[in-house]
Image (cartoon, rainbow, N blue to C red):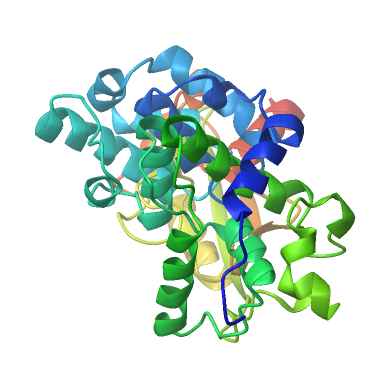
Length: 357
């Protein structure tokens, strides 16, 4: 990293954000910590364009933290369905309940205390505190980390905790020092905007950046080498065999997923680790019921570090099927809309319904 910190970083970012940054997003028009917190959780690893519709629907159904805290988890998961990273939704619900129970429905006003709440890490806590309370605290989401490592020429490996701490320290030192009420929200948003639209991972538009004249990476002619992080999570593939059990009334047998792991706590069709296990299950069902079986097209669902190869099999009951695969329950299409179903399962059920019902 360079020997000394560049000057006037905060002033340049604040001025740029006012004239070139994003100033139209709905969560930018408020300092209500509930609305800012909701947007920050939704925006984690998710594009703004995707979040906009979900954000509006959540606020329409849960206008404040008390309404969200009172909600049934299934309803929360149902509204979240399709947004992905479902742990965020479970933590969102838990956090709302904690804010109501421990803080009387008022979010804590410091980043340090916000970071003790479920699902709120250090960077998210800093964003809420900066946007809502103008606290002089840094953030280090992926976009901001990229901007700052390039400006600073921060070559240390961020896979090591000591180097991550050093970057947090540098980020703290670059924060605005005056007019914090206006400067902290705008500076924080400005760094996010720069990372999203100018200081991009590939082919950054350096000439449009307000920090180009003090950027160590630009001066060295190699901004894309930053940030440096050697530890990579390897992708792996996994096959799931899905049993879509349909009765004569058009309902499908759904089970709740385990409380840990992929799609934890959500409703889903029965899942098997291999084709043989699914076929054994179908054979046992056929002994007590009149079933018709059909293999559906396989498809791949990409998670953060895993590819799920999904192999659905449709099994349709004849007359009145016996209870199957306890625990579980029959759910008709009218119930699916409000349920916490993983996005690929919802699409599978809807496509199966439109094609065969």
